[in-house]
Length: 320
Image (cartoon, rainbow, N blue to C red; front, side, top):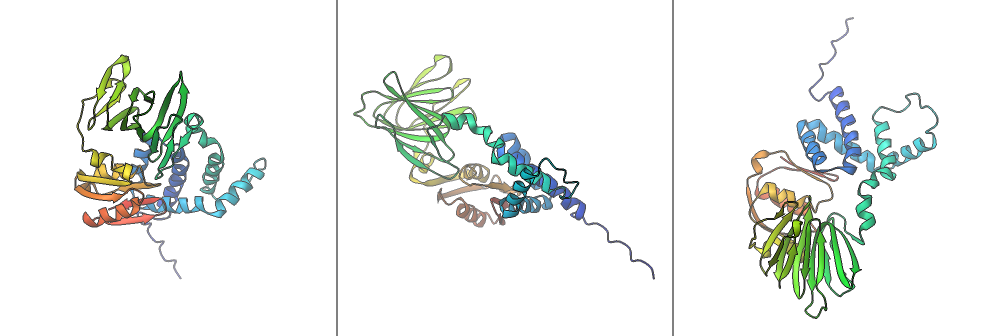
């Protein structure tokens, strides 16, 4: 009796799946403290092979399940004893991730969290009132600090986006700081976005006095906007505020906007990963009005109108 030949490994055979699982577990750790470069690298890895997406979904399921937390506790209790290889290789980085996320990785945003008086998570908005009576609406993933300084109200936007409403009866203007920007508004409504070291100001009502780097100064009126970065002011613009400030009313409005830009905006509101694996979709233009608190429903609608296939996983959506 002769032995039958061993089956040939498929491109996504056991070795490929094992490699993908090891890499997926490494990504689980890395993404907890990810920067923009990490995010781009993760998207490239996820699109590189079909088994990568499958492995990440499986790893995240393990991460969110009870066995992971039991294993992390077990490792912590027995960390002084040798396990002599009793654990499979991919469990060790996963348990390490659990221990890191229990404490160490939270230090990544600790300086900002210690400074902030108000925080919103991804997809959340929050209304508040400052001590001088100014009303503020915080957008998704935003950190704000407020204080009284020399008798004036100062709001420091550490990250994200906020909409400020200053009543006409205020004795002193509200001062908003965001990176290189200093803005003062009295009897005005305006929004400030601060992301990646650059601030963007949009004025809906009233006049705003702005100061940038090297003591540059400029005034903005209703309907105007301008960006402020490390190198000073950009060009004064007159945007469509109905579209750009639709988030204030809980909407996302796009008019002939490339899908790549639409997805970039949706990523700010979706508490997970949105990956586009079909490059032909990037320049497809989109027009629509969507609820910002339902990003998954928006993605489903976009997939329908662009004839894309949508694959939904826990905290991960892939467009093909």
